[in-house]
Image (cartoon, rainbow, N blue to C red; front, side):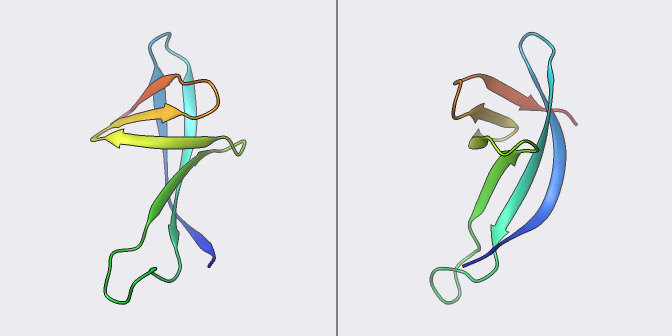
Length: 69
């Protein structure tokens, strides 16, 4: 399955650094009728976990970031 870029946003860590985040969705859902799975990555390719609401965590470093409205 291929992932399609569906959104981009910026997030900030506790020290004020800004991270450009890309949101991807699977082009075909795993199960017929189910919602597509979203994945997140930094612009440089590092994976990002969605913790809920506007909170995310960088997989490699464990740094928590907050989506900038």
